[in-house]
Image 1 (cartoon, helix red, strand yellow):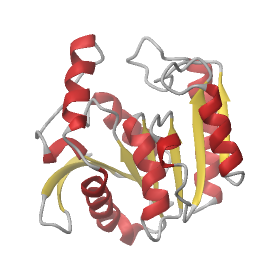
Image 2 (cartoon, one colour; image 1 turned 135 degrees about the vertical axis):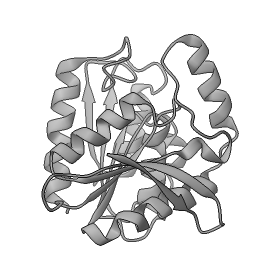
Image 3 (cartoon, one colour; image 1 turned 180 degrees about the vertical axis):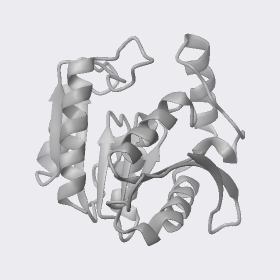
Length: 220
């Protein structure tokens, strides 16, 4: 596990957390952060996928606004994370994702997976980034605003039915607009996959992870 430098196509330099499997990788996975930076949770997610055989890289998407951001989940952290997120734009984010994809592309098929803001970015990358093997989006509240885009790869999406930021009718809109997308809804709220958040729901997180691993394996 290490930090590596990346350079986007526009010359921007950013850091990324790289987690390597102990054996030859099944493929590579770009892990896209929440609004809390590449913090201990995102690093643990990358480590977990590496333990399952994937080369996992988590680019520091906030580096364009502020470097080295690692936030917790208290109200002040949420407010600060939203503020930094407000300084980011989708086109620059896609450049940073592409840099991460390029860094790990020699290890085989590359998929993206994202959480919260990263879930929206995973959907955006699926629709705009060429050459991805698959994309997995966890509770991306901005997906419904990008519903007119067409994915270029297979997509799996995970939502919580108690998520106040993603109403059930938004999930239905996604299902109707993109019936080929594999959509799962859990008896949980926003952030249910993160063990550091009050919304953590272990049964939902475990089931979503099992489905994620099966999906990634099927589309590698």
